[in-house]
Image (cartoon, rainbow, N blue to C red; front, top):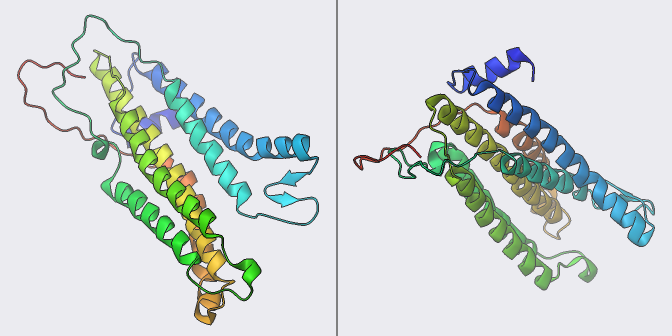
Length: 271
């Protein structure tokens, strides 16, 4: 990573770079960027390769060679790959344990210290909206019986989106609570900044997926037999899609200064 960009990244997060933590931060940022890009590319290319080998059909970003299309498939695959790349970057972050070090903490780590509460509430709200929106698509009438959604598929989709929302927050909390065995104050500060970056990136990809689901819900409602929905749902469908792209690319790059809670237990050592 270029030195000026590394310094800017650290300054935006209130992190003082030292000879001790500089290589850790630079290595993580480079690895994370590569893994996110590779994850997104793999998310797009892998379904194409599998479909070509398995069925002999060329499918690129959801568009089939026979003219049929699933336009939301491509972005969905890219977001999933991006999310998995972000998780891979966190999983490959080496944090060697010190066997002689206590694990008690003066400053317990909680998710709200690493991720703005507004983003946490947005995740939950969009998850609920995705579940309810999926149900609503089955309640409105459609011009023909052939286009009426299958209730079993809708129930499965609603359950999937609800579980995804719960799992997303669980993964973020797991990242925050991973062991932090460093004794150096500079390494603890760097590790906090890295955790915040990981959590933000995961949140951005998760929000992007939920917004994409909502965009799909709005798009389905445009083909309903309700004139009001047919004419009004195009704008929110487009807006949700545009916001999903922004969430994936922007939220993970937002600077955040970690705010730790206070644990008053006497004699405890930093976690």
